[in-house]
Length: 408
Image (tube, rainbow, N blue to C red):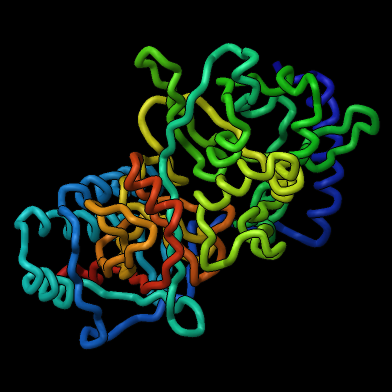
């Protein structure tokens, strides 16, 4: 149960916030408009060659998930691509038209003619070279137990009772679109302050009274990487599995421990991977606090069947869903990416990755995915997904597609 004292003083904070935020501000009607840039509109002669190296069945399944999202938002909500605006109703028509054409199992030539005739393509500006850096994430499986024991000591916490999420847009229109504040009420001063950092959460002996543990893991590093992935499966033994999903964070700033280890010359940039980080931590247990606590962000989870789920509240599909900066790119949109993937048959860290291109849907976001030159590919689960997500650090190109106004 939420501590009553937090509710008692929450209204004091809200009153103070009103005094600060409403000075000279008169809130007008809220516009359901989402603006995104930079997306460069291409002429048909500038379109890339659309070759999908995967099966259309998984693409159709991913399109269905985006359709589920768009059908839940107001049909008049607007999405802006450069100077062009499309409503959620048009996005539904766009995805439905594309999916219907896939059912014909078209050839590469036919697919490209269809896109050139009926769709507008926008290129993501990316970095100064026009490239986007693609990384990967996946759904891991770790060992755990429902009850704490000497072997299973590391709790996977649910969302704390004393964590407050403050939507400033409710106080003034000038704060619309800003990230919600994550806070708590200080027990002694009764003031609203930032929520506990990773180090503080780990040091509070009775934190479980604020946040009920869902499950206990046997490895601290497993818990950290589960936070990075945002969802996973917990192997409880005897054929039982628990699925956990992202429920929120402590609001503290995310910092990459991989980047920290590169800065400290512990791992070479060209050798950096999730596997490299885990190996380093296993060989340097006395420095684990130093490294893990560099990331003050802490993720809380919830138990839920199905998934994993992206930020749109729909299931993400392996190699068909990407995460981007939600402030820049349109949610749920159809995309086409050109990058590289490892050999599925011969998984070898030393083997060169092969060029690949395929359609994806923009269905997720992430704390580390910021700016116009970043995207994170969801790789599914299993050994190939783990390897790809752990080693993916490849530059490529990203495009957004949408049906022309009025259809054909």
